[in-house]
Length: 242
Length: 317
Image (cartoon, rainbow over all chains, first blue to last red; front, side, top):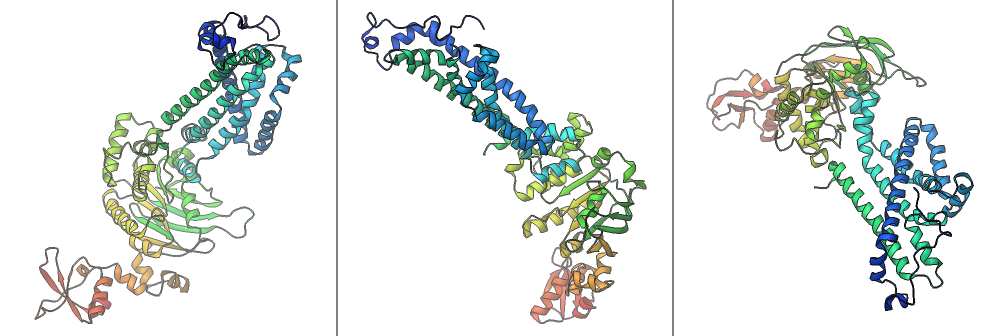
C-alpha cells in the first residue's frame, strides 16, 4: 500500500496548457490524447486502486454482515437493534465519517476501508436476513417432516433460497461502494477519487481528467453490476423464467 | 417394489396446548392395520391435522403413546423417525431451488444412498406417479402444474420406501377434476404399494372414496366413530356422525358399490331397457333409472355384451 500520493502533497500530473494540443489548451471536455498519455501513470493505477478498495470493502463488509445476519436470523429479538445499528452507520455523511476516523487510523487506506465497510452493512445485513426469512413456511415444514436437521435445513434450504436476495444486496453494495469510494480522496490520494480531486482543484477544473476518471468510475460500477447480475442468473437457475 | 407396511396404533394419544382451553386431541385410540388407508375427517377444530403431526412428532404428544409396528415413536431418534415416514402436505412444500430429481431424491440422499441408486429410484418413482422419467427429471417446481407438483410431492414421500405415509389434505388445493384423477391414481398406486396411510381431509366424499377405514373426529379431537365407509354410512353411531356424513348418506353408500356387486337376473324380453357397464356405481345407476323413469336396466361387460338385468329394488335394497 505504499507509493500513493497524498492529495495536498506531491502534485498530480497537471497538463501544460502552453504546449499541449488544441483540445488541451482549450480545456476540452474530453481530450483522448491526454487519456492515452496518462493512462499508465494516472488512470490505470487509480482504477486498480479503486477496484482494490471496492473488493476489500465489500468482501469484509459481506463477511461481517453475514455474521451479524446469522445472529439476527437466529435470535429474532436482536434483529431490530442490529438493523437500527446498520441504519445509523449509513446515516453518517461520508465526508464526516472519513474525517472522524482520521485521528484514529490516520491518513491511510485503513481509514477509507473502515468507512466503506461500515456503509455496506446497511444494505447487506437487511438483504441477508430478509433472504433467509423468505423461505415459505410449507417448505420449512416439509423439510422438518422429512427429517432435515437444523443445520441441514439452513445449508440446503434456507441459505440457497436466500441467494437471490443476497446477490441483490451485493449489487447495491458494490455500486454504492464504487461511488462513495471516490470521496475517499478527501482523505488520501487513492483510487479514482484522486484524479477527480485533482481535476477539481485546477483553477478552471481540468475537464478531461474529471470526465475520464469519473467515466471510469461509472463504467466500473456498470461492469461490476452486470457481472453480479450474470452470477445471479447462473446461481439461481430455478428463478429463470422459461 | 417391496410391499412392506407397518401397523400404526394410537394409544390414548392426547395433545393439550399450553394456555389453550381443552385438548386438541383427546385420548385418541385406534389401530390402522398394515397396508390400509385410514382417513381422519371431521370439522375444523377436530384436531385431525394435529393427530397426524403427532405421528412424526412435528407436534409432541402431551400424553398417551403412538406405536409403529409395536415400537413407540418416542423410542425412535427424531430425525430417523421422520426419514422413515413419508410426509405429504397440501401446499406440497417442494424445494423451489431443486430440480424434480433432487426433490424426489431428498430423503434417500439424507440416508446416504449411492448416487446411482438414487437416480434409478427417481426414474422408477416418476414412472409410478405418471410423470416422464426423462423429460420431467430436470425441471424445477415452478415449471410444473399444480397436479404435477402434487405427484412429485407424492413421489418424494415414497422415495425411501417408507412403511408409513402421512398425507395432510394432499389434494385439497387442486381443482376438482384433477383432484378426482389424482385420487383414482393414488388408489391404483396403493393397490401396488400397499402402504399404511394416514390421510387427513375435511371432505367427506373424499374420505369415503379413499379410506379403507374412516375416523371421524369431533370438536376437541375426540373420536366419534372409527369404521369402514359402509358402516359409517349405514350405521352412524350418533347424530353428530349422521349430520357430518350428510342427509344423502344412503346415496353415498350406494356410490361405494357397483352393478357388478349385484346378483343379476337373466335377461327376458328386455331389449328396450337402458344399458350400463358393470363398473357403474349403484348411485349412478339409480340416478339413470330415476331420470328415465324405469324399473330395471341391462348390465353389460366392458365389451358391451349383456350380463343380466338389475332391478330398481335391488339397487335400493
